[in-house]
Length: 221
Image (cartoon, rainbow, N blue to C red; front, side, top):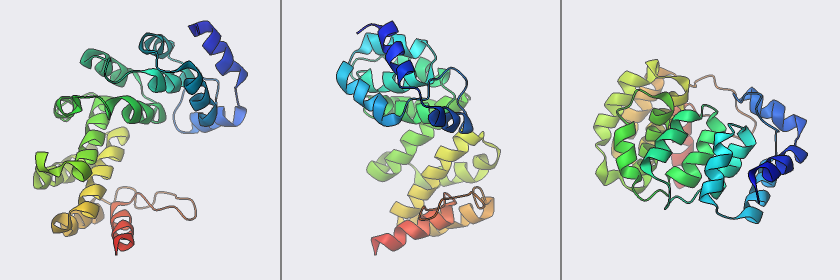
């Protein structure tokens, strides 16, 4: 399947409500507004195609980039390509798909994490904190958790909103998964107050770290 044919198929799947939804969360005008299920179905039809995926990414179309994250081969992509892709995408929802489908399964993502935890690029930093949040849960022995809490306490108030979100995930995961640091994580969350008044739908848990931590810990009992 050629790139123009794929773009035509995406265009045929356009949905006005999805366009509005994407724009609400920061997407630009270069999109068709395709539902996530339709994108996944198309990816299943095309199957992994690394070169085609990079071509789709370079169109800068939101839906093409969603699709590209499902077609990229994480074992084939280079570190340079990942850095380029991460830095070029500002829409958080596409960035999250890139993280889940490409960065997380990338064989040497620890090297990326170390690099991105020291970068000034907002989207690389966002991804770096996502990897760190995951390591807090799955591989905490590689981390200095007290030092991470120090960084969060000092840096999170002034961080870009994109980075605040994944820093907050890290803070919450420390509090949820490491009882010895729970009180400090709760204290930092209360002190910073970030997401305290964040609107949430009925039945959903607030991203405000103290609420999130206490809710998840209560479910463990």
